[in-house]
Image (cartoon, rainbow, N blue to C red; front, side):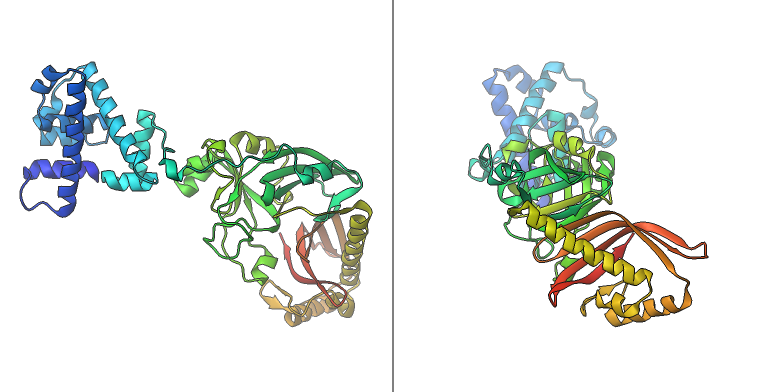
Length: 446
């Protein structure tokens, strides 16, 4: 560490056998002390200069920064016990701030600035916090220009029309009536409410998405995924800090909601990655581009707090698209009814233990719970033969569509007649178009 290197040099009395790193740090400290001398001269503090040699100034600089090395100071140098006036400390504070700001202004980010100063990025952040220095300072060439968004977007205008509906929501009768819809091309997050067949736009918010355009394909591509997801977990600031560390928690703000990316459809397409969250941020929201995340959907702390009132983890969907497509409301309704009939027929064949009709709802490419279609059929047929009649109830059915796929999400109550066996949970079916209908390629039960 920076301070340990300083005292190594003190103990060695600047011997010739200093390592290259020690020499570099020594000259870095020498430069800081030179800045101190120049600033003191500028403020006519010659008397103070007379009273302090360079070695004492080094000790003062380290004391002020506040690294936990007071014990080392006392053991290493008796001069560390000297008492200095408040005015001297104020001057040193100005010098420390000046040196750190200079490093930040001449490097592209805080990591490079910390490297230049010979300390860790986390230590530099703590210094900036203590000295009230904005760590967002960057060179003018690299400062992102905020994107100016229009007051109204085509989607907002279409949402205002009762005869049009977004084609991603085919049926919505969930017990949690709220849907989050992200339109990446306009960096807008919509909060929708579906109740008694009626759609209401509760509000819309600015949001930020991945640095790179397009759908997420692989881990690290810094793209925001496009598809149908659910918010499955909620993290408080304390929980976020435990995951990302104290030095990074400011990036995520007050709270975060975790998506289930990659979902079953993503995995079928060979996509990978993870850690896609909807979260806030402590940073100034308008000070950077709308495309500056590593893949998450980011909004302000105020917005994420407001949204949290409408989110039920495990039940609230977040649909992410590049651009929304609207259709005639009646056509969307027809598609929803068709999808509902497929789900009802699937349930009936399962409840009646009709293995032929039941397995016909599954795609040849189906996989789930480590089984392919043939293994799934064999497993179900064995259960059909062993058990009494089934009773299955589906509630709060949500049917969503994106990119030639359908996601059906609902509460499933399953029981076997004349037994005490019963389960209740959330089931998700993933369907794709095959043979002029829709076939299940995966299913999940929680």
